[in-house]
Image (cartoon, rainbow, N blue to C red; front, top):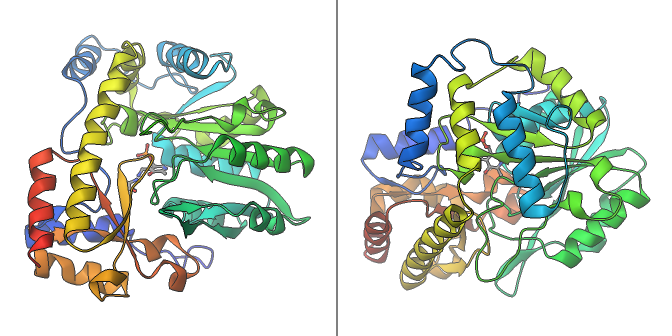
Length: 383
Ligand code: PMP
Ligand code: GLN
């Protein structure tokens, strides 16, 4: 492995899912649902395969049906108008969108400011682009992890090129507020920064929290690349259909990179996702309500088992503090957990440069059937 990537070994998700399989544990580590997305959308994929739609290379920017559906979704949900031909790009999941955006927009030596803890591919993608990551740490404050806007402003230097923002935020479950987003937008405009926003959990917000895309704030549409994913929104993580929306110039740059990463991807699945995006909004409501009920089951179970729980306002992850259990090292705790309780979780420290700051936090995924969550909670209570 070259020097740029030497610090990145196997992802924690692969390691922990392998551990779950090897020990027969309940896997609340890697974030993937144990129930597939809508039957009718699976049927749509089968129809596309049978009818020969997408079995050969689809068009570079994505099939027109899907680009149109993505643009319609952005307009309907957020009032954001994008031209499906020039301002929408289909990618191989959000993962490729993130990598392609950074490779397209970052010059070697540029600084990229990202919220810490950060999703693991951010650090690797910044490194691949030759950039330097500058983490701004979300810190526990009255039950959730919050951004310190002064710390964010202080992190921006003359070398900063781009802000990489994620809301709803994995792994903390934080949903950035209108005030926080407005301050981020003001900073971006004032310092003339580009912004990449990872909004893959846009439809998973609870208890009245609202997902607001940064692109909707003044001065932001032309400097923001927004990222979404059918893996999260429709529970098809294996299909690897994601997307990018933004100005013609920015999306064109991301597309220029995508051509040489995967060229195209997920042919027949693109047609199925186009149909998914055309489902009535009631789908989102049901999806969200189901996930909220699961969040409550897991959060209550973890509280009963003695964890300090940061009840998430978004995503399908709950971050806990293990110190009330007399533990302080999340890595050691997660490595021992399959043996102790038959449950797998993720140590948040892997999402930190400052491993010390992340050490006592452990993430559990709740995108699992209710009986699975109840069983996991039971096991944790008995450990
Ligand atoms: N961003 C975040 C914050 C995520 O949690 C994930 C999935 N775990 C991704 C991006 C990657 O999404 P995809 O599976 O569509 O590549
Ligand atoms: N995004 C998922 C998570 O945070 C995992 C995706 C992956 O395994 N790369 O758990």
